[in-house]
Length: 380
Ligand SMILES: Cc1cc2nc3c(=O)[nH]c(=O)nc-3n(C[C@H](O)[C@H](O)[C@H](O)COP(=O)(O)OP(=O)(O)OC[C@H]3O[C@@H](n4cnc5c(N)ncnc54)[C@H](O)[C@@H]3O)c2cc1C
Image (cartoon, rainbow, N blue to C red; front, side):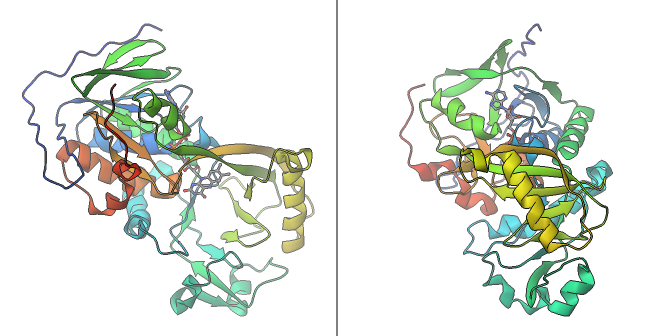
């Protein structure tokens, strides 16, 4: 494929440096914004940035949602058991998905609610409004063989098909003029006088005013080329999809034995911890063990046939917090690595688009800034 070379933006663009402590803001009305990565995070950024009228190009090494998004359990899980520096993001995540769903009904979110017990959420169980008794649990999930005495029920939560959602967001961005280049790998950056001017790709050079890194686990390698590698690890987790009898569960169930939910087409999805690389802990073996666990937990599950069992690599920073904000030392590079990425994609997409296009600093992202890694000034 011949590389499309975009020239630098012309026109009169206002640029300002807001006095926001450590956060540098660059207002980018009318500029060319390149997003690296078309997982659910990059797709949401593309949608929100294009919706604001920005000139957007998405560059993806594979296909849309071919990274970890393809193997996500995709629960819009907003509950956190610990003191939570991103509580505001989680609080607003569901509302933001309702907003997005009104604009893009094809997101098709299944707002089933989620039932959790025996998974270290004791401090949130004190909220009586979200606590169910055994009888209430059975009314909700009549197929549970061993319902607990109490459980946390978050009626507002749901889940989506993360691949379909990413495609819908990208299609929405394209309707607003975004360009999407798949099978194109970003190899590095072009910089001049401490400012990014473009990217080097497997198909040639591309000029850019702002580059947004939504490359999932690829962010460590990309920031390495800027001499400031961010500590984003590839954290394995096992994804399983079963052919299953219909309507065995109504909600998303998370307990010590299993984390499961039905998909819109009736399959049963499970997410399991990755243990190690030994033969007995390969995804296929875990899928069989998990099938037994599910059969022990649910009535009427005579067959559970694994259709897919694989490891997905989640991009998780060393402190397990999202990394969102302008990259220290190089103007025009913005980093966006989010965990949990599906749950927070809608809210993060909106807030980041406001920061990049409008220069509106988000207090909700204060704990996520890349500066916390105390990076030195680069020599890119
Ligand atoms: C089993 C499992 C269960 C999960 N369950 C949940 C859940 O219930 N809820 C939740 O919120 N999250 C969950 N997650 C995590 C969630 O899936 C991720 O947080 C989210 O998908 C991350 O999206 P992303 O867009 O950042 O990354 P990705 O989907 O990996 O997208 C990044 C993209 O960047 C591209 N890329 C990388 N490097 C380059 C480069 N140099 N040039 C061009 N393109 C590049 C990749 O090809 C990729 O497509 C789960 C993950 C797993 C594995």
